[in-house]
Length: 219
Length: 173
Image (cartoon, rainbow over all chains, first blue to last red; front, side, top):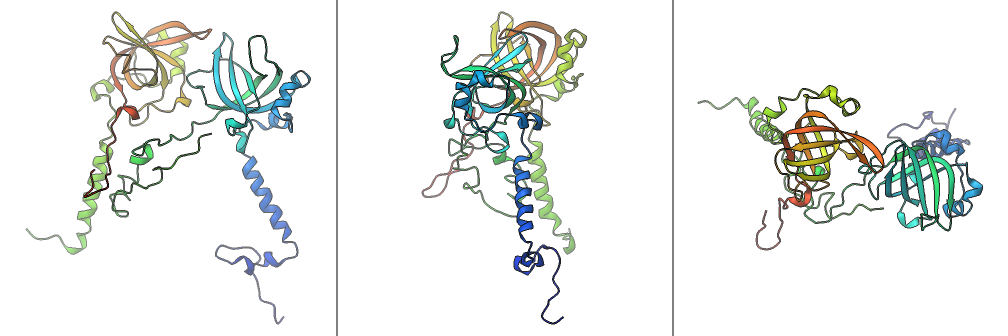
């Protein structure tokens, strides 16, 4: 047929988007859906708390409201996270007090400034306070067992008590180069003295390389 | 002496670079002498030692650690260490991978200002039973290691910066 150019059926590497048959098809909406769903799988698919807990969890409630209505929500499942304040070891369990923070990507706690209260997490067994040290980030999936907006008899702050079924300890953020002469593993690691550094390639010492003078955003 | 044929000329700078790279890599010594490392007899995991410390008495281990507590005793020092895996280069690894705690006994005095809580060490030592203790209110079994050789790794704040850059007439390194 004259006027019709044969077009490849799929989008290929190196092809311009407008060249593609898929782009001009009436059902190009399908591709949008595909991309969006793929993205959402990528973004939510690697959450750290097991799916069955996350699915059961209370959602859409502000943490502060949960604390206020702790009695009513007792027994319900929750996924929450925060920053370790203290760890106490008991014969059969470990109790972690943490500053709650809302969860973001992969259920990681966001900034401490967004806190709505504290959580008291009971984990069966032993967790080392040297590992779960102050300001480490945790995400917990578990059951609400109580709480108080007024603070309990031995706690002077509003808190939500949670018994953990699953707990995840987030890796420490990268060290912050506080002083301008900072150097770390990546600094003297491969690429610095290794090939590509004094080897062929960049021939001189570049003090403006990545970790330099750049702060990682500390939560 | 005749010059190497042209087609081998490229080999000379390549060999120099390779030698530099290998020399640099070889410089990452493990911190523990070869003599001590050759005595190591147990390379299994920490948890099984902790489960039955007496069975492993006499074995020599190569463990990493982070100082939790430093007690000076009449016969030397006693460190409570957070056990850490030892990397290929002999350095103590990530805290998150810690399997537990152990007790290090040393005949020499380890100054609490140097071996302060948080300091990272690598140790070769002989297992010598265990000591019961507590972490918080929880009873805990600390495997005991009698130090043969101990290496303390420098923390960042211990070291002066290796390079200085100055702007002016000329540069300082």
